[in-house]
Image 1 (cartoon, helix red, strand yellow):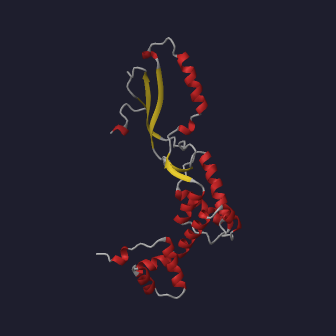
Image 2 (cartoon, helix red, strand yellow):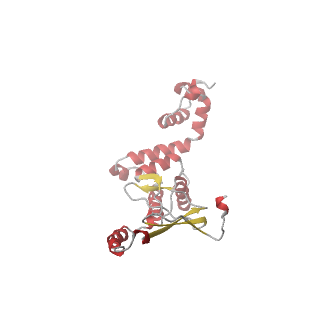
Image 3 (tube, helix red, strand yellow):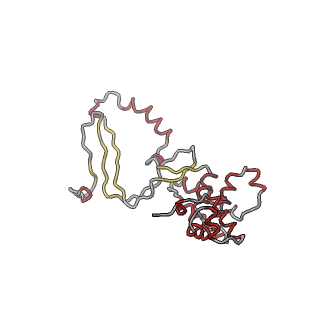
Length: 234
């Protein structure tokens, strides 16, 4: 059974205090007793020293008023924190689904290109980058990114005149759907308040289904393909 010491979790601030106490010459045993945790937790905290310090710095930058940020001491990461948002906006405009690991990888690439060796791509950096840039993460909305709202409105205004005089059984609408393989993630970061249209999907499909029906709903679904009995149906 785990001891009560091992169950106690340390906050980010406490982990920073662990690092400070170690630098002041306190032993790992003394630090463990001070916080009521096991020595293993202290050891793991000290191993993550660089990451924890980066998280603290990111939190301070994110929570500081803009005026104070401008006058604060440079951290060396300013260029990275400017380049990643620009890359993010460009990627989302091209309908690329952006995940956390993708942003971390891009930030590390920028750091390497700029010769910044002190930058740590921690989860803390990602967390406060997301907060600082007002981002949210969620499921995208299918192919809504392909749809022009003005075109939809104009079509809805034209449609009543086009179908005037036709019997309901003779009025059809058709669309298609497919089972995709090698698809990209269906969730992405996006700027809060903006519409989150779906990202690009692979064009490689297993089967395609035609959704074609009249106003009475009389027709069955049509499978588009070369096989009479597609393997995808088992």
